[in-house]
Length: 245
Image (cartoon, rainbow, N blue to C red; front, side, top):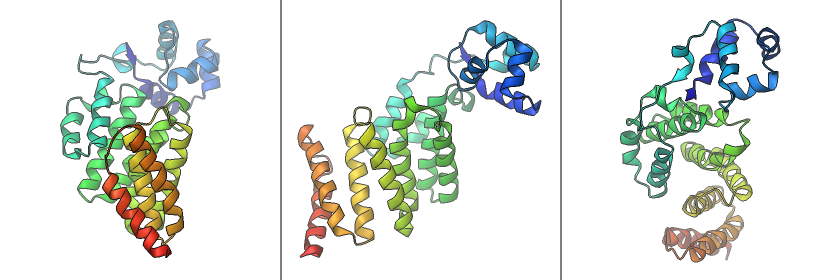
């Protein structure tokens, strides 16, 4: 059973009730209410107590999902990004209703993230940035999903790349996130992070900073017995070496 935590948050704020006040009214601990609002699993009796005080019904808070709602759909989107088949994103997003995408935090993050990619393809950069900011905000207090920021910061850097420095700042953030989550970020995504960071440094003519990241990217490719994007890495690396002569 999936609980629509956003309905609970919205109603609590609508009624002007703090988590502490709600705890006093329901007898449910503040920590449990906090977990419930974060979309984490809590005993259903606590959900019922909160529903009752906030005048919510089962229809308001219980999301009835179709069998198509499966976390494998996020794996499908990961593969689409990693293999640069971005034209397939819209078809995958349309497999679920928006209500279903909002059914849990990770799916919701993926929805906003990939909508941003679609907006960028349409050159609608303002909406792309809004969607990315929504996605990033959704995991601000979710340490278990922190690694997803690597891809989202890279996407934000790509939207801002036109002005050089703005994009570079987010590529740097993306690599910092990756360096703390190397076991959770797929190596192809990491290679793209390094390439984007190299492009960013090339745009600001900081050529000496390119070479270490070129080596890291090539190391990842060698370790995984892949030639994926090797030519692009070597091209940027050669330009940097030529500029430094």
